[in-house]
Amino acid sequence: MGPVEQLHMTVFSQSFSPCGRFLAAGNNYGEIAVFSLSSALSPDATDLSQKPILTFAAHEGPVFSLFSTDSHLLSAGNGEISAWSWAELIKRNTKAAWTRRPNYKSSLEIPEINAMTVNPTENSLVIGGGDNNIHIMDLESGVFKSVLQGHTDYIHCLSVREREGEILSGGEDGAVRIWDCRTGQSVHCIEVYKYEVRYWDGWVPAPTLHMYRSYNVASFINAKVILFH
Image 1 (cartoon, rainbow, N blue to C red):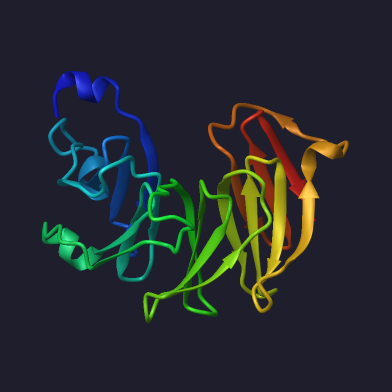
Image 2 (image 1 turned 90 degrees about the vertical axis):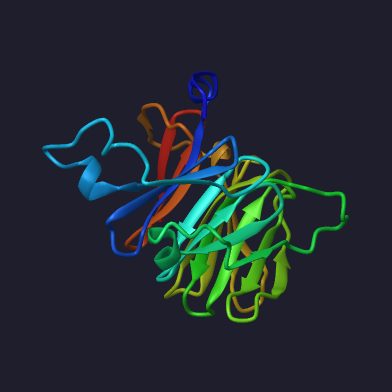
């Protein structure tokens, strides 16, 4: 990659390996770079050791989302998800273990996939993106088994409340929706902008949604961080 491409590079996603020794980062050119943290963060680190140990083309478009399971790195771009074995990546083998595409309404539809997470209880992959829907894939069979519909604009972020059997999603429509994993129905819709809330000012580079004990933490592009129970 030349200096011009590097100047205009945007990193959209990152994920640690299961062992914690490697970091994967996805950029706007469809590439994934894998860094050795022990080499990059060593007191004796050099410019060379801080560079990726592996860079490869993963998608034709930007890599919007990365997520690590116990054995694989999952990457998502425009309309598709690919899986890469961490064991093989460390050996510098960049052949995808599998690639899947959700069942979109049209074969011409190529929405970006902005968020991924895993529901361990059901061994399923939960994805959300530009078609405003949440797609759920069985990780064992690779089959997309359900679609959760309710957002009116694209989905930015996802989180799973494993103990409660719920999926949380945050969208461009300004809503945080809570879904029942068993029924696939939206059981709550929190339109945060309608309520008077206390917030901390600060720059939030992208919308996110996290669980902290029994609280949900949502951050939005308008620089608000909101805590709700």
